[in-house]
Length: 164
Image (tube, rainbow, N blue to C red; front, side, top):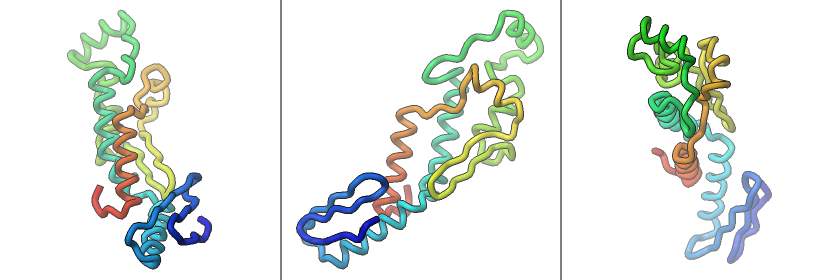
């Protein structure tokens, strides 16, 4: 971030864009302190990312419940569907034993991978067969409403909200 020049309009380059502040009754010291706070929070987004985990896991549960979002997953082959109905009655697609489902939707599952760094989120599962299923039946999708909630949490954090 470049050193801001204060006046009636202050332009600060931040996160690859510009933050334009028009002064209206705020003293320069207060404005500088607020902008420095925004900069510091923008450099470490772990708090809103960690808050986002609950939202992300709930969305992933919806993906499973709908058997795919925004598009439905392909149906099971007739032979496998018959075998599954006999051996795992009532189990839906991708939920034969629920090991994979729980590992992607429950924070305390022990198999969930969720790592929030200052600039990224790493998400996945320790269940080894996930990689084979996710190509045909993706569970890792970011729906518009979920992205909007991530945006809201990050913006609240940048604006200094303690709770998101």
